[in-house]
Length: 200
Image (cartoon, rainbow, N blue to C red; front, side):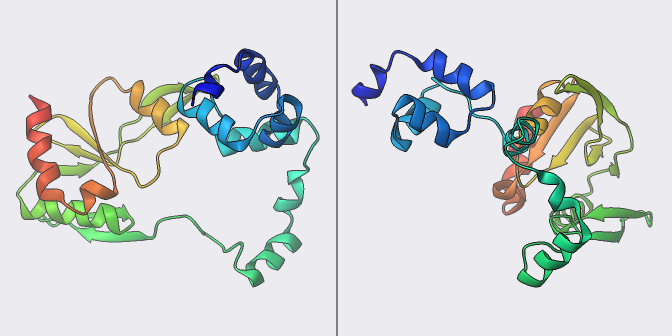
């Protein structure tokens, strides 16, 4: 909207936010509405932090004490309410026998579906064990894509939710990497045709 374009202090807003000010504090300090901040984010006026980064900044600034979430008593309390469950958010490990008789460990139903698709279509693949270096938040880390397609010298990553860390992995990856998300998993035949078009 035009009135949001006329806000002239987006740089100051970004600086305040980068120093740890919360969305709520930004609204109060600069007399902005949620709509104005949403417009600013969508139009590149302000870049918001990921939830994990925001949590770290809040903890460092002393606004919140996240150590309570690490206590056993808190976890037991949350488990009774359904708010915390052991291994929540982690994929189930599934032993899978490949077409050549090799047994591999897959993580979750999406990887299983993709492995079955590869075997059904006689695609030579293996569970990737090669790590690739990348830089994230000033630290050197290792990235291990899920699959390697042997005939195409390409790698495939199965991903349900994309994070800033994933962006860093993928943007710095030097080889051929293809990401399979929910849309592709639900229609692998279409994804496979697109894969052949992209790889040339």
